[in-house]
Length: 542
Image 1 (cartoon, rainbow, N blue to C red):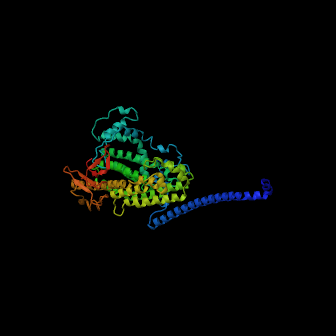
Image 2: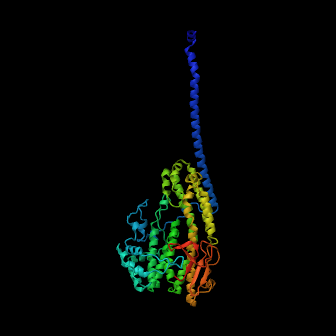
Image 3: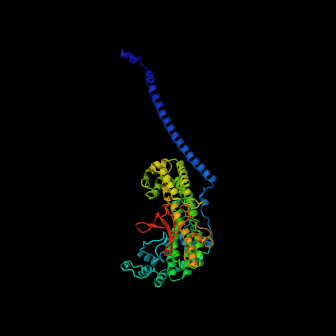
């Protein structure tokens, strides 16, 4: 029977029994292919949709900014180039700082970054030997410059073992010490004379390479040099005051004020912060000259101070950080094919506690849709515009600490979490960049309060010259000595003023704690002014 069955079975029957199995296998293979194609199309669709969504959301927000009259293009913030022959910044003493090989940030002169180092060897060595006094009656000005200590420090030269010598004991501001200090600074005379002459040029515009693809790499070598020259001018002006040479001291102070303004138009936050530091440097000899300046000199100083507007300057620099720097960094990352490695530039930047484990974001950054970086731009720009910019109220000339704290809390709330979470929610760059801007309002308020109080201080000294005493109230200064009195930037009320029994006065703002502490300064353990506590004080009694 089995033989018959085998005989009756034909080859065709065998093939037909195996056919269905082969067809099923083929169908399953095609099904896998279709699934793979579907997945590919799904991924491509996801990327296309996210790229489209990110780009169009960013474009829509830019249109909303333009409708509100806000700047949207970096070019609108960059000061135009000016002719070299009419530019203070291209005078021979400063020109090497931005003399790069074309298209690069490599100096033609490799010694350019060390500009003035040979001139300042004696000054640098002397400054290293000195210690500042913690005594403070003024939030911006320290004790009178100890010219005897400076003269002693200059006498040590650049000897590394000079610190073993004891400082001389002498009274402050002796004429011999002042002369020795000016001789120690004599190496700067040719440069300062050149800068004084160049300050009559029509423009002052440092040729910063704003066109760098990555704005975080833009070099700003001039800022440290301008601050350094300001410190030299401060010491010269103090020594000249001690010698009774008030005209020469005023000339140096005027040059210092000019240096502060050479970077005013720069759309870079650090430029404004350096300007604020320079202002505080200038206030030291200005305050030391009270009792020595003439009426006309005081009027000139008062008028120069009145032109400073750090509220407007800081608000403009925040706009620039929003458009030029923050957006510029995000766009640089978006355009780069090396996103994985680019996150290294934020590693441990110290501005955010979560900046350390950014390695976890690198792979995500490399494979994420480019549209997500448009969303990063939108969220960064929106948070900056909605939270930080309103802190500076230019219309009412106010910076309320409560508003600043609320803005910082709102930014923290929206950018809190792990780096991966921030990236998925398109707020990674906001979390990396915005915390560093959180104290800009406080810094602007502190600097502008310094300007306002020093301005009133000049008017008070003019009143004393005319009446032999300080006024009982600030209202006596208007309208003859001041058109109007500045209000306290913190609360919008009048500045605090008290005339003490010894004839000295205390002029003050309630400061960042928004509490009237009766003109008392709060010092930190190091002896520096605690800007967050106590009042912000200007006093004629140093």
